[in-house]
Length: 328
Length: 293
Ligand code: SF4
Ligand code: SF4
Ligand code: FES
Image (cartoon, rainbow over all chains, first blue to last red; front, side, top):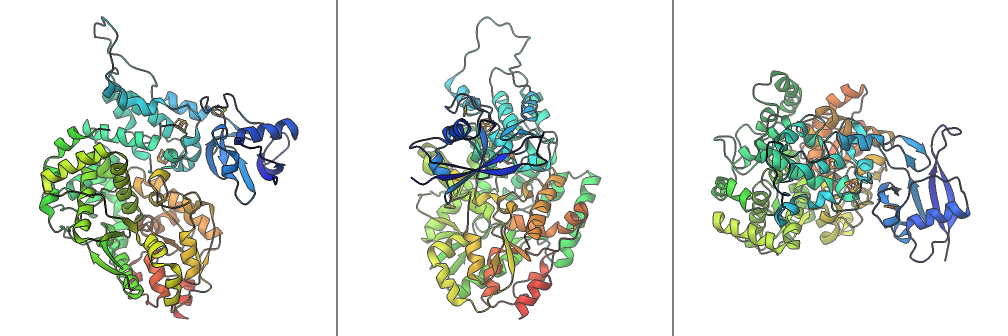
């Protein structure tokens, strides 16, 4: 079998000003994982190659790295599957300070988890006579988020973290969902309020990198959507993100008269989202409005009503029934 | 070839020029389209967060409307495409969910989604059903010399489990179209990233920074224009470009074309027919030179 080119990112702060790719050549043994290959390179070619690993079975979360540009667990990846034109590129995770070669400083990631109170807050006023039982349905709500192995793959590829390190990030939000929906937790509202602040759940841009890279069922984007559903259901909507969702409901469902029917009212969305009485917010959306009017790009003033809108209105009239009937 | 055209909200609102280009391109290619005037908004992910079952029922209703006509659906918005396919795949994978959706839909609108209709973006139709080689035959104005940066938009690529793109980490359909119309595709790191549009309301600075990074990436790679299959990416990069330029303190001047606009230009459309003067960023010198040659 031909040898595969492994282009591995190297960096030693004592010597290098910036990381560079070093080429190794290795014949991939049959069935070898990417981690097996990296180990072989370290053991037979360059003992100074630095990276994290432990379990080799996709459970400890240590071995995440960028493979051809995207975060993956090296031990959960068949090496042969990621070879492109005879080569595979291996780099450290993104959005984290580099320590050496493929090893990054995970502090910012773990700090983000700490910020969401990653523990149950029981109701202290209650007289506990026995353990609090969980029904199967209770468990289903928190099961997916519980599978997180803290590998930080999601954090590495998150598009918002690339532009704003203050963002809570995917794993912390997934962790938060696990507690918001836990029937034993007493701080549901407090949690949702905290998560509704800037840098929280509404700052996620749906890039879906986290849901794509996550090696478990935790899939943060889907958990973030569940958090947002919880915020809407508990009516914690005093922020631009939640008001934006309300604007959809009101214009598509026609639940506010004259705003729309079946389609989005694009004139209404920005004003509703920043809040009707938020002067700064309203001022901030004027320039784009003016630019669009100048070009004739502004949406028609009269809201568009679809044919057969009655069918859609009938659905929105049963809004709460739909919420009750939904099963994850 | 005939499809039920699902316009989405933007092509009827802040991106009406997308509609003009779609009609022009489809007509010249000989693809028949019938606009679905009775379809609702897909929910764009927002109604999905407010009320997941209602959102899926809204889309199931749209699917049943097309099934009634016996036509497959053509979308022209990357976000609609991703959201509608997600609803479809969720129902495919979870028959109990599909049953719940249909029970509610039947109760409130008397309809039922059978699961037959195909939902495809215009780009998939051009590539898979129509054939780029057939498009090439109809090109009357080769866009030679124009360097075009593809910008995919998240929804047609990720999450992978809900994407129809063959190798979603290395998509190439935009590059192939760009080459087919005689232009040159440019490669840059941001082409598969998020434009930031979904957080324009909750966090404008981040939203604009994301689009800014993408456009600077394209600019550095030598692009004259950007092309995108998602009108929301277009809105963020086009309508907010003056603010982005101010924020980054640099001139960008990057026209952002809708996918069908690039096709229509190659089929001979002039800029007025395509209402390109309704873009906030007007055609730049290079684009004018190529089109007026
Ligand atoms: S979907 Fe949201 S949380 Fe996940 S990676 Fe993208 S921006 Fe980050
Ligand atoms: S959510 Fe998924 S990708 Fe993120 S740390 Fe947990 S297991 Fe890793
Ligand atoms: S080594 Fe433990 S997850 Fe890969």
